[in-house]
Image 1 (spheres, rainbow, N blue to C red):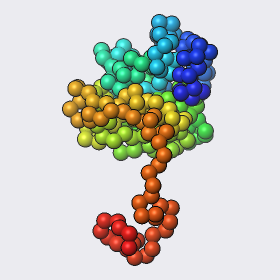
Image 2: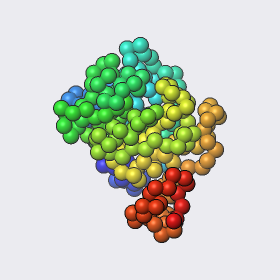
Image 3: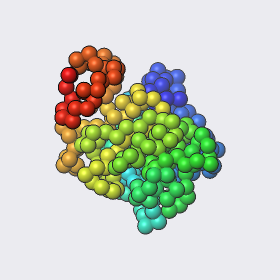
Image 4: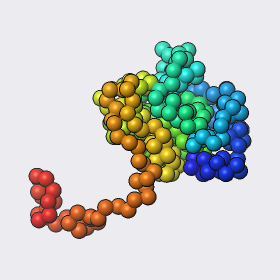
Length: 268
């Protein structure tokens, strides 16, 4: 089920958050041993669902979180033996904002060690597999997140992208992924690879779900000096019509004179 569908059904009283949790928990227990999407599952998930207010905007939406994003009380290893027993005392801002709206962290997803890889074969623990063909890789470094979403072990996931680590595994696993504009999502709580490029980004099976997560996570954060003071409006943008094509050239092949122009594009 898609995240926005879960949200709507919980809001209408057709589903309880604990029912959503039970369905995904059983599916993860059954399928993940053959995929290796998760490094850690949240053993307290069912208790969290019991305490959850179903009126919250994201009540019942389960999020898989890449293992280089801090989660309070839940092991965060960055795919490395160096951090094998590290349990953060705080949540990353992106995670805290999702949880404040009722989202539940189902677990921490596998990744190339410290994000240095593009296949999730370089996790210090075990490789992840592509749900569509276990003989192939899911991409990386957010391969566990992509595999979890593609196999419907979670409706949405968070990854991090420095040079393609959300976009490439999303493509490999046939899901949607977004690297936000730098500063749109706070980096606070993200274990850095290259701070001037790193961004936390959503992964999902629909663009509508990407917008749902972006509206929940985006916005300024006093703990990240590079965050942008821009209001999130991603779901609203999906309802807007595309702007008219400049000069009427959209969808047409540019003439040779324009294709050969080396300066700023302009109509010949």
